[in-house]
Length: 453
Image 1 (cartoon, one colour):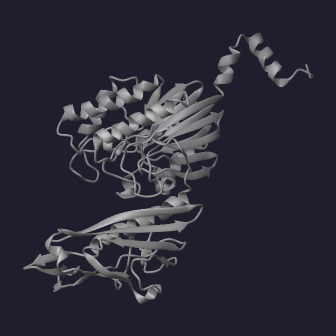
Image 2 (cartoon, helix red, strand yellow):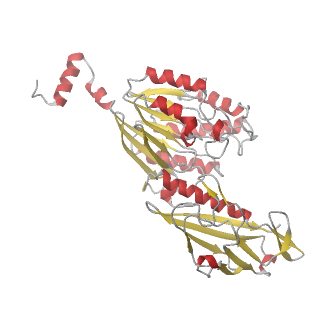
Image 3 (spheres, rainbow, N blue to C red):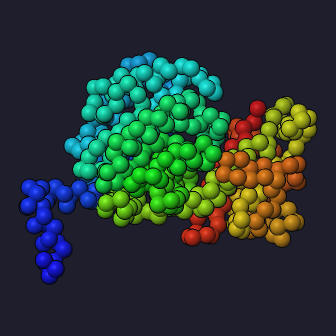
């Protein structure tokens, strides 16, 4: 027997024990399709159109099973009653059913949060709607919003990250965004019963590991079993959080939900994903842009944290001006409420919150604004040209969810207002673009409007 090839020996053993050799071989590999969030979105029909296109493109990869990261319906925006909610749910399900393959979903915040925003909300009405409607589908969801499923020797676990409603691991009350003791006990039992699975895949909507103190006890449990990867969504951009104790952590981007105005490799496009498993080993992860079907980078966590910090900085620009028109004259209101006449606008919140140089370019409406200028600290006076800011310039604190300054600095960019133009306009509009280089060239844009009150 020593000269018999391993493959031949394997099939001889199969025949001896009466095993189905083809089934066993197939069970050691699996192709998984991944669909991202549809909501939040400003237009429900457009969101489902993107989802439908993604399903068609993903079908060509012939996945064995499909995972949806959650936010498959909207529970608040344009939802007046249960019938509105059910109509969207049925539409989403009909799109997913086109695969004619098993599909699973992690329940997301837009699926279950109630209308009134309240931390630790006790309103479970939308959660009940979702669970009740699931009974009409092939989804293996019963009384609990967390569940598991076996397929081709692999075990899939869908955790529920919304046990505390209106919570978030980044923008909400992060300490309350965690898995309950009850769900943890269920997870322990489920893992133990499936410890001999070829591989285990965990699906959860919120990337709970952003608060590692909340997630560690889950990770400590998962690493004792053949868990290949943990997959999440929610942020509407993809990122690779790397391998921790042999487990790959991945966040997938949106498939219809609103995305940032940035380059496609940094979360600026709708996407779908394909994962190939060989046993417990994660053989390949590939992201595709929905409409072009072009291959996307699985963006490193470090890069997306940088993009998020810059996005927060750009969001701060809206506070830089509060303009008032009175008797044909333009005034500005300071943060302390003082109103003074003005002939220009200025951007104080421009800063570099990250650890590599950034390039800033301000594009102004030349009909309304004249003679844009950079401050002397930039070394460039012409405000129509871009400038470079070194790391940490004009910043007080910065992370991936909050950026600010300890005091209000002087304006980095100013422009004169054409007094005649304000008679025919109700706002001043700017576009600010920031770019930087890390693993590749990245950029993000923000349109800023200052309305006349």
